[in-house]
Image (cartoon, rainbow, N blue to C red):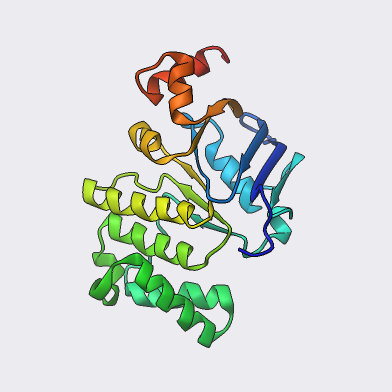
Length: 243
């Protein structure tokens, strides 16, 4: 992570327009080293579009996005992304997935094997890595992809609904990996519909609705600001003033 100054991620008035559908933005967002930020909003609020702009999948129509001081197109190797839907090939083993992804990333067989070995340890899947991924539970698939993303050691980690649909034990494992990533100095931006998870895990929460940030702050400060019992209630109150 050398050479990446704070903030690791800067979203500075970014806007994305579509021919059909709502405009997302302008958005302002910062994520620093060692910080875990949760982006919270209903379906269609612009969370996934925001992630895709940060990754450079969607070009920004106005404003700018910088990852380690560079626009997404020039920031290759600075961000790792774990989508909600896992891209898994059922006939490949977990280990074969890690080698395949590593080879795509490094372009070198020797470096790919080193990266895959590092990722294998981070998944915590042990002997299950030698089973076909078609036999994996959803939690195991998520651990496989998250382990690879962590092994890349990028300054920025983007996670879309990382514990969605997981059982309690799998979710606890995933949350621990995510929190450790931030504590080790990475900048983490995640989306989640699980407000209790966010309240316990995030350093800062960003409320987004109709493509705009409506409020942000530490979980406790947002609860106090809105006189809310939980983040769900705080979100409802925050959004009510922006409709």
